[in-house]
Length: 313
Image (tube, rainbow, N blue to C red):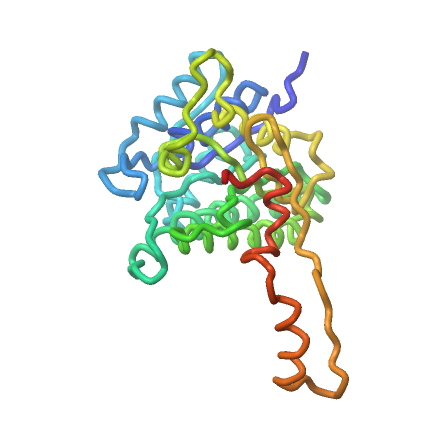
């Protein structure tokens, strides 16, 4: 029986560990040939010497299970290296069909203490890294579509975060990057739809080296039950979004963790006020908005996060 991704080529960034590794293994299990990218730095803040070992280990794991995989150890935040990564998929397997952007680092600090370098580094890896690979993959699909005279198959799955949805006090750089990724995703979805390409974003919750502090108080079950924070809970959604079955899913943001998938709506208007005159005055706005916000809890506009079970407290 044919697998859902049989004959397709997938590229996963940050695939040497954690979520990326689980996603690469799942795509291979579903029949895809996988290009495993990881820069291989040991520090979750992007520190340490780059290493081919993490990407090579996952590629070998896929091959040992009977799949096809090749490793790439370039930095996706470098525009030229990202182009070489996409080209590697094309040169090795003839084309690229699925792009999963997952690579990222953390440099957490409160906004009043954060340095320029800490801001730039996180924006560079997360947001620019997503753009770089998307740019080259999109150009590939556009050229293929023009050559074919019609739509082709293409899937992009980007990685956002609940830090964008509900805020994260000590992660202004990370939250901003993840919000930017949602904007990049929706723009890409609109731009590439006519070529047959979809672009969606996920907000995963998983226990990885990047989230070890966030989930420090949530120990894995010791009674043999599955860990609700295991990356393997996220990977099947990525496999689905990468498949032909998800042709009707485009420009969406999905929250996923521990046996739950939630579809996030775009922001809706909570209240609307019209001026009684031609132009608002300070006094009129004070009379309308101050009573509206009086007594409301902070971040009430993100109350939907609580409904979805996204908060831990």
